[in-house]
Length: 396
Image 1 (cartoon, helix red, strand yellow):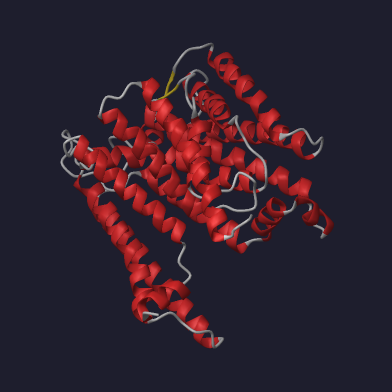
Image 2 (image 1 turned 120 degrees about the vertical axis):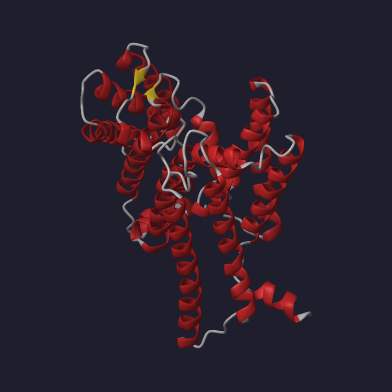
């Protein structure tokens, strides 16, 4: 066998993520051609980054929910309820944004624990519980604000949603990129040293360097695009938007939880075989409650970013969010049967979903057609998942 092909075969490369990245690049190229170059413009890429952040934040925890063999159809309604509550406390109640956000966080966790308890303690299927929550909490959002839009006027709070002053600027963006590149290189070097210390064969240096080069180029290209966008009324370009930083921080923390904590291992064990997990002493009910509580935390973060970006809390906030986050998780490789999923995959899945939606908006596709296409994309992702697992022998 060719030595290069042999090295690629033995390397621990997630080819599914490679295929997803290729699909995302293909989507961008097609929409850029059809839109006459508008899709890849700095302004549109900046908007996609902001819009994807909200979906991406929630999708990271939806991955774990699905991995544990549960589902949450109420994420959009709960986000709308919490977002309107925070905005109402700020505008009508005169609360400081931090205090209002903490109140919203407490409510979100309480709501999530309520739904989690019905599932974990009473054994009510999460599908049924959260389907009821989808309706109930959408109604609660109307009741909180009496059906009225609640403006958000705090200047600092608005920065959390991106927008006019919601980015870190050119210099800070390049410093961030340099830090990420350095971290990737050091991580590669640390892995090679660890393998050498335990006398485990290393990949050829050129291969490890090539594997690291791909995310390095993506980071540099992304920062260059963000730094190229300039609001006409401002003197300096925007740089990386704050919502993207929040999304990145959430993805890193969730990745750490999945790979480095007992809780993360428990979630995947429960998804692989709940009965066996209980027999070996894993506290399945407690882990399920903790998982739903984590959902409440990230729903609150997404709600804050969303109302900060819109400068208001509206009753329609989070509408159809459940479709987008579940689709992002499934497109990212999360098995609906449970036991398998990837945080990085959810990031790519969210980008694919938002890119398709943004591209159709640029082409002035009607909302009905957009929903049809997005629904079919979700079905195609599930079909691909089934076929991929059969071909690769992954039966999880």
